[in-house]
Image (cartoon, rainbow, N blue to C red; front, side, top):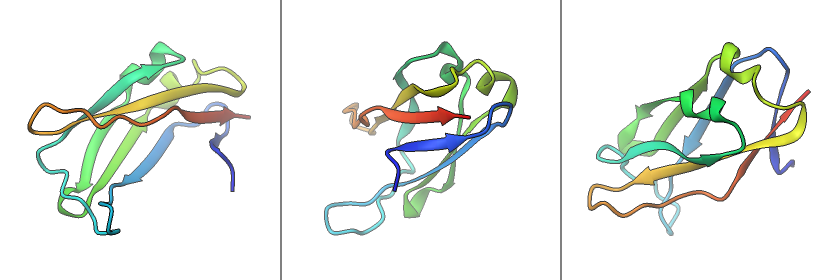
Length: 101
């Protein structure tokens, strides 16, 4: 298993996220907001987020090919996903690396 997401230069990025609680049960993300907390490239700020099954903790991130072509070649691009809960607290990820080949 890799510690990065592998993509081909010129391709869009389609990434699925699943959110679980400490017991392994899906978290309801219906009231949560998602975005980019920080990133190696401004291109990630153009990512679109869709809750594909909010009650079961499923989120999809899409970055168009036009924006993805702005990412550096190799394992040099990263972003941190920002999740804002209804009470205003944030639950942010560590860097998620994208390896462009």
